[in-house]
Length: 199
Image 1 (tube, rainbow, N blue to C red):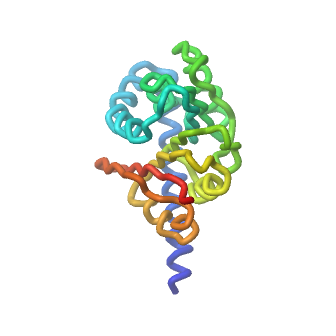
Image 2: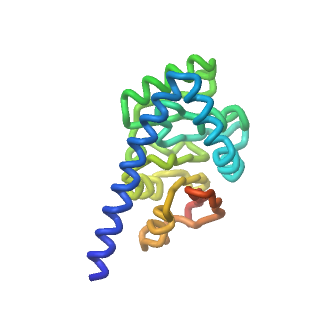
């Protein structure tokens, strides 16, 4: 019975993240194209994102990976502007990648931000000091497994979630053995966890 509950809860978490991914994609496409949506989405995100980026504590010479950057890579922008670090944003949606590249070029930030097509469950991680995982990334368990196996031992992860989906995953034995929760932030509808790799 316990196994059935675990399978069901895993399916439910994936479904919920997948559904939110499509909603965020639509909002971000509009924000990358229309100034009114850009302003609204930026205003909505800036408070939470700023706190999360402070928690990630990026220094100027570090390399940052933004998994699930979307068509409107606002976290990439804030990280680059606040810390002067180089950010690589990846997304597994070709349309989102093209729109994000166009947006970064329009903002004249292509020297600081690189946008690439990539999957967080397979992307090479060895060069990155800090990793920001967007709330719309799914299946998140595969991404976290890949990070546990291949990221730098000293790297930090900021993982966003909602409805305690990340906390539920982190209680699984495989992730308990891989990650420590260094800190966390609670927002009205989302949570953010700063994770470090257990040695």
